[in-house]
Image (cartoon, rainbow, N blue to C red; front, side, top):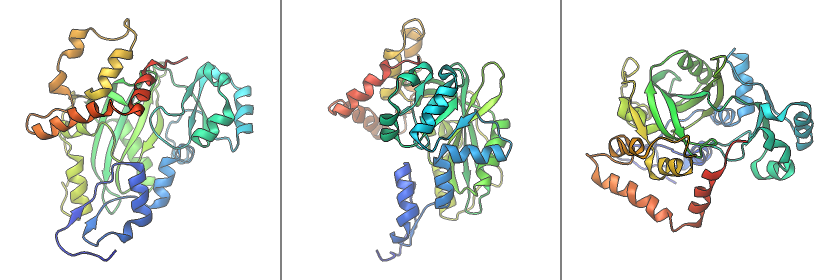
Length: 327
């Protein structure tokens, strides 16, 4: 494709596959199209949890005990040598809850099939479910300098056994920000990423979970709290001036992924664990990321899209995920 001339265009890759395509084939796009991504090797490290943990441990960043077996047979030997109740198995690459097996259910899992379906697997120390989950989101410029940071706390999730957050709130930057910056800087990062953490409920020690090497699902919360990552990313990609200091934001801002996430979470959660219907409905529109009084067309689209998904059989398989529970 020949380079086109004209107004500059900032391209915001939102999915892993889009980032990978740009890293491999971006040179074929017109010359007025710009984006901001790390090197292909740094992106690959961030997607591979085993390699991420190796670097984190070298940097003195706290991580759960993790084994990266080279084969199914080695994984089986590791499971036999460790109490399954204290571990999880998870894919080396990927995000969300797909492929994760908790505790005693590991021994009933056909490892050959699971490895074939999800790729190489990790065996990792299990952090108790009631540990607080946090995320630190950052933007780095072309020179790998941090230009924006944001932290949030996960309040609720779907599936309730482990999956994307459906409610979250903004929290101040703390030591997790320092750890996250150290890790991403070691990779010479450019562009955006979110580093995920969990606080052990007994020791209160933060433990690294993974790097999400792209824009994240809770992006709307950061924007509402005061850090407009998409605009800052576009400015950085186009070489425009950025704030001299990290943008300030408000703590305590709540944002919900309502359609269909928080609705499915509420319907699938055990009645003794979920909040009352009145509390669930309180702030439904105000806190929901799908609705914005200044963008009625966007809000309408966010309502129609999940409704259309109901016609897709894959949607119902997604719905049934909510009936999974941790063993």
